[in-house]
Length: 453
Image (tube, rainbow, N blue to C red; front, top):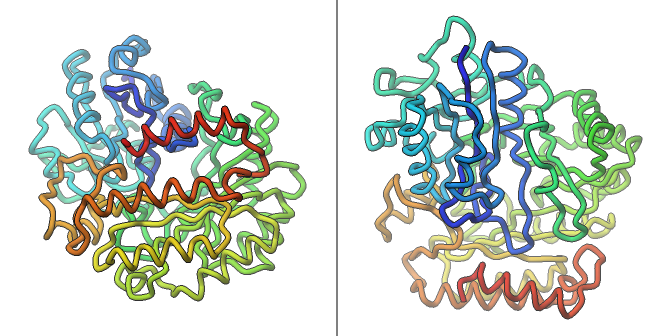
């Protein structure tokens, strides 16, 4: 019988790293770790429908290399490793060491390797297979008897179609039994939370986003009954009352959102999710609030209409105010994510964006560097100014030249905006909690590490 290891890799520096679909980054200075939904889903599916022994680990919660190997109890024939863009070289090194120690065949998943499958196989001979796009049913097909390696990109098989399964309804509920759930807590309250996946796919084509590389552009929804049952079961089994409804764009289908929220009202839970500003109105936000939604994140990116058009965001600045106000009027806290250093943006453009973010009255604003994740249009655009390769680390801690603003000036802007946004009144009273001086000083130290200042 085959023994299969499924894992998020450790970090050489024991850093906390998020590797979940489109989101591959260091854990934020609010110390939020995402529960590994993809690993839990793979574990559940293989344990239910294949004849293999599965061992699963999330080493991304701050585990180092040596500690990770101490935790592995089986001698795997296969290792499924979730590769992130943030620490690509470290993740690949872990794969090499796994192969050397166990002589197991390495299968890698994730958006980064989906973009450069053949390059990865050619450069790293210890990697046997690359699973492109969403991995669950592809990997299940491989491990079912007879095993079918034609579903993977390999040196022998280079022509693999996109693996976007149409029936996510057939997926079993994720298996969280392998994880220490105490690792996944809300930064504001310290309460445990889990992730539930109501929808997959995003119809929009933002130039910087890797979401289509994992779940595709076609919106697919799970039935309301299945989502509600999964949440109820997690609440009953683990005593979890807080959830992140994990979608590329949760509010893409308003009718679905309302139908789901009407049922969530009965569960007495608290939940957060994301939204586009142009897919949210007050009526929808009100229903969400009544069902337990207390916070929404918006990928605003910039307040410059010219830049919004260039990055193919699909809306204009006027839509930003309308969408954020809909959430605020419904009593939902708001987080705005902004990207600094997008192609074509000047220092003046970015300063205007920061000023507009203040006027918008967001409860919290977070600023990132424009990161050219592999497989995106932004990668191709920034390649003309930067020496980018498939084998680099692509971290939102790293600054890239955008053709206009020198890197040193862009770093100064990000540090300035991040510090200023932290100490707005709304942020100090983040999610209704008053921070003590000691807590603020602790946060300052975390920021210093995060910003490398």
